[in-house]
Length: 391
Image (tube, rainbow, N blue to C red; front, side, top):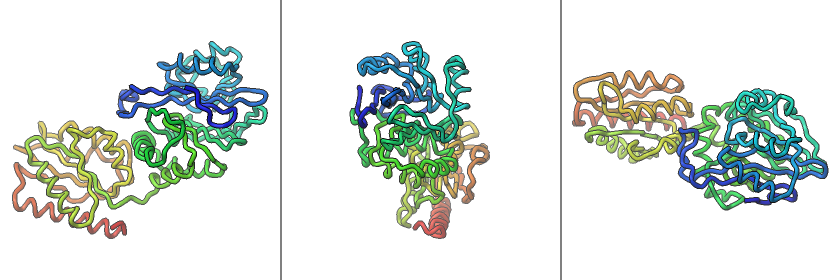
């Protein structure tokens, strides 16, 4: 569907209503979109990014409807959900030139075998004059690949932000509703952007020097309220965490669940916000989402063949890979005859710059002395959150 953003600026991308997993890794319960944009200048026409190769024909149909010739294809990022239709676009518009940065050019020649003579390479701050429409290119590496850049349309104050500020949502709405988009955008940040939090903070400052009215990302609806999403990113990337404890857990025979439930109740009574996440029912995107603001994570697991439950292994690996701004971590759980569950979990969180709260691994069901130790863990968490000034 073609959507008008401003005069001679169109969204020509495609909604993918049925997709439920991305990169064979990330669950996307609301589908997604592959946003491509067309800018018609007085002299030249530019297509900004393409779409996933599964949706190439729909993109081509949108372009045929507009009855345009394409002079430039701006490649903000080489990943195939953005660039996958590029070979077909160049086949249909043989005179078009691919405009991108040196790193993205390198990747596109490797991924899509595009001939080097089809490229125009740009540097940070370079501009492309389309005739009464001028695109400025801002290199924003590691948001979330090393090749990423964004394109800024000066006259209309539109930032074509690539994966920056995206959300995996398929929708008939052109523009985002701030309330509805907050959680999908935060989940997108958590799953994709959080490992690059420090770099993203610097890139926020970089694009913040431009006057931006509209942000048009590569996935999800467009932001007319650019301040809303930029402020959200500033909050998510800040070093300060919130008065939140996340407890990803599994319980096979009820022992670990009893420990979790008891600890949750004690923390709530102390004024600590806590979110238990039963990994039997919780997808890893929700775990990532809750990690964005959490100060403390309690990993809770039974022992399975001497180690942690596989679902807990996955959640622990995810937390280690995403590198959230956690300050404290502990482990609780149970075993039947023995094992190395605690040792294995501790070995999986080396990326986390955290203080460890004394763990509690018990044999069988929790007993009175175990509940007392859980009280001690809860008190430690309360005291540490209080020292940070977040309670």
